Length: 266
Image: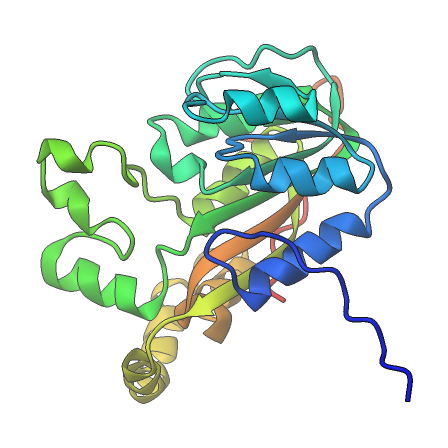
């Protein structure tokens, strides 16, 4: 009996079924020019190049990958995400930023730069820690820190390279709308421990009525529902798909929230 050939597997650090699905979704896209930033050890850059994408790698730290860069014959830059990126306006069809924004001082400066160098109708793909899951909310209530950011309570030099900037999905959505970007998909993954699932299940009947009461004056009811959805409460990270939209000439970048649709959870 003829065996069906297994689908292609890729080298993925911290491999998970979630990440495999994300990579597979990339490979279903129309081929175009991609900015992989921060590109780390080039694992994703290599997959994209091998599958026909024109990929530019960019990372502020490129130690120990010089030979790999030469072998792949790729364009490589060493940019600081806290500063302006060295690319012309509307240079890329796609931008991928995995595990980068939470490591820098000004993540929204980086998002604005992504919007500048992204082509019209281009897409930005981002992975960020979920600061609003049940574990994180409980941690903040107890000691004032968030899940994935406990070390910000410690100024020890050993922690300087780790996550430094918690990002909140509601604020992220606001900033995107201000600069002509629209979050069109939010995929949550890496579930929190079963213990917290049980606690969340017990507290949700109490939490939701309280949340509805205190947020009743806010108009954006969709975001309110998203923030207390099971996917937000019970997962460690977010994978965001963001699309660049047209901005009218009179569009202001401050105080103009709501011109673009809000987020939805898959």
